[in-house]
Image (cartoon, rainbow, N blue to C red; front, side, top):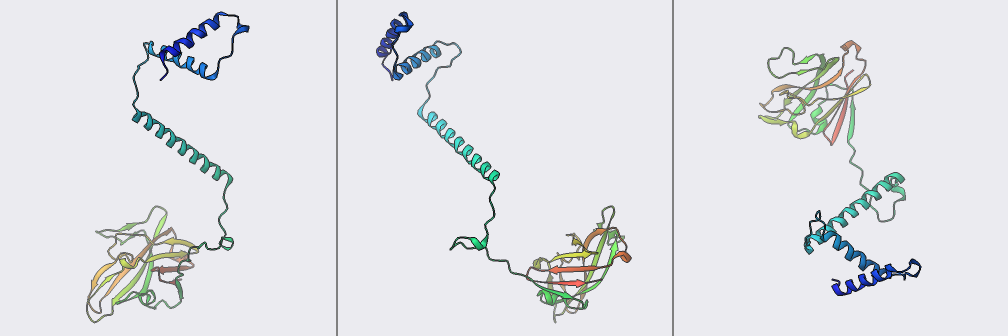
Length: 255
């Protein structure tokens, strides 16, 4: 805190100097200039009716400084990121990576089986235990099931529903709980070369979510449904179905 007497002395000296010729005015040091400016600003603020004069505690000052430093750090980080995006970075070539740098292990490839025999047991190929599953037939619909009083799936305008049916059978000597949901089956179709994924539906016999206790030797029908372009069955030249459970997969050539 500057002493009042020292400041008044400096002001008096300044007043004397200012009454003389401008050519004879001595040069003030930076410290003296700062002291005069600080005192003058204080007087103006103190006697200004629009200035709310009050002391600021150290905690408030520290918080303001911390906020300013954080804002500056965020600004610098944003500028660095923007500069990096403008310059662009090339992806690292695993062949030229530095020694000791481990690259991600390749994902396990599925064993793909292309089947011409539509009577093959899909459950056996996919590792689904306790049942057999065979392809039955397919058809095109505007809604499935047709004329159903319960839940049904409707095709969008200009589309058709491709419904592929399968038979599953409990091959065990006693009743068994069939839970296909846990196998996370993924099904997609190639219709005249165009790829279509099977829909996730609320149908109780949807192949992706089918769960039921089957008595020994009993057979049930389950379905996979996909939405395709509005064509007739006669216009389907090629039709393939790819089914996978993440471990094994197989492709059926239905047409």
